[in-house]
Length: 313
Image (cartoon, rainbow, N blue to C red; front, side):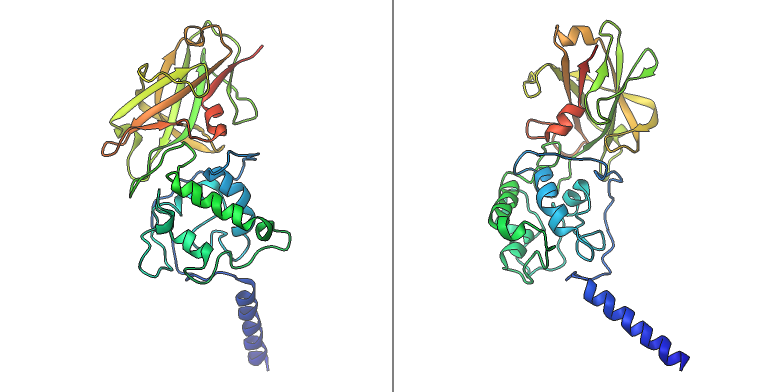
């Protein structure tokens, strides 16, 4: 009797798992690429710019697609975080495919992107497979699908504003930090501008980058530019970033330890020119692809303010 009872329990457990899961793709789908360990779990992204990856994550992927048993990290695409959403969509070969779609998201080509085919029912089953009772997907379905299409049509830009093109994952910023007189400078609200009280003393800016395959110490182009307006950067005024002989670990953009590899020493008073805000953008290349501006004008607002200094009393 005990053996029969044990088998009965196993059958019930198996049935429960099947009922609870809404996944339509194989379970044995381990991530086969190197993943950036950071994510945006700790961020509250409020009112992100329309048709950006942040907009799609906040309004569509997280509330509609990352529910338990679906795209919750069990299989790809992984919609638990902003970073995992992007990294498991763009230029990633899909599992379910009828042979006509190269990637889940093909930058610039929504009609060649599996995600659009799944949303439109060209490839079954139609996604989303199931929604929560309080989901606004039924009411906003057409708008949400159009936002995804527009984002892809505009190049499937990442949070920095870079479009990867075909088979090209751009370098990413992992952290920016500043010290003055040997003391680390604080930020506003953890991820806001670096707070600066004294402008007549030099400060050191440090940067951490990440890339799927390249070591940032091997980057072939390492520059930085400064501006007192968030989107008005001079096209020619760039300074050299120095590679650190001894990289170090410190808090990064996502609140975890990252490896800092680059620095520059600046005189903030000269660069501020009597203004109270100073924005900066880095220009790097891993060697075989174009130079990437981080962030560029299409980058999300949160990253632009993270890459800035604010003079405070």
